[in-house]
Structures are given as C-alpha cells and as structure tokens.
Image (cartoon, rainbow, N blue to C red; front, side):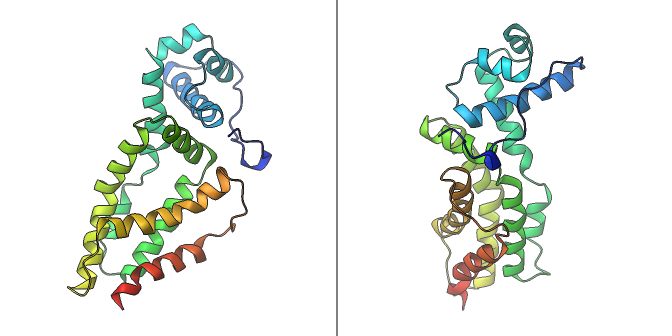
Length: 208
C-alpha cells in the first residue's frame, strides 16, 4: 500500500533540522508524522519517524509522551482541523436551493480531504482496526450529516422520509473518488464538480 506514484506522494518529506521554537517544532513533527503514517501505516516505528522529522527519538518523546499521543495530534491536524466552521451554517442556509447547498458543501469538502495523507491514513486506520475512523465518522455524522438529513426532510415536506443510510450512500459514493485516486491509483477527473452534481441529482431524485 506504499505510494509509488510520484504525483500522489506527499509534498512533505524529510525535514531539515533547524532551530525552531517549541510550538513550531511540535507542528513540524505532526506534519512529518502525518506524511509518515500515510506512507507506512501506524505500525511504523517512532525511530524511523524521528528520522523523517529530522529530530532525535528522545526529542520526539519530549513533545509527545507516547506514540498514541502523537497519533491523536495527527488526528486533530489531518481530520478535525479540515472541517470548516461555516459548513454547517451554509448547509442550513435556506435562502439557497437544497441542491446548490449540497453541491457547494461537497465541492468544498472534497477539496479539503482529497489528499494523500487524509485518504491513506483513513484506510490504514481501517485496516488496523483503529478507532480513528469510527470517531471521525461519528463526529461527521453528528456535526454535518444529521443536519443535512434535517434539511432534506424539510425540503421533502412529507414526500420522503430520508434515512441516515441514504445520506451515507451519497457521502460514500462521493468519497470513493478519493479512494480511487489515492488508494487504487486509478484515473479520476481533475474537476470532480460534475461527478458531485450527478451524485446529488441522483440522491434528490426521490424528491421529484
């Protein structure tokens, strides 16, 4: 599962050691860890990770008491940090048609998560049985998909009772574009907007 396609490899490689203040050094280690875990999975050693980050293993443990603590920081950086605060407000903005809101959200969401690190860490975590996936999906469901379901139900006005699984089918179909690109290294359109619009149209067909 190593990324051998040069175009899909992370831009962050080994970091040249230089003098930084503590917050900046910590951030550099997190970024290096994200690139390292994306490449080799969570089974990679902290010794190799320290080399990637351009620090000693002892210094790495000065900033993170354990590998688990570092993984938590990566989770915050790669996953929670990419959820834009305005998405929920935009999804609930009924001054715009529902279709426009859904297309806008998924356009911004895919721009945020269609990266080497996001996709590959997510897949590695799933293969390892790590709780990261479950935590993220639960957070996403509560923060965005549940309100999205409310907006669809309001638009349906009794004509259709959307279930949570309906939203997950829409969501999963769009996210599969990123899996095809970063996991399977299959061709994916540079501009995924038409694909998103088609998926949203299929989803909203039940409202017709």
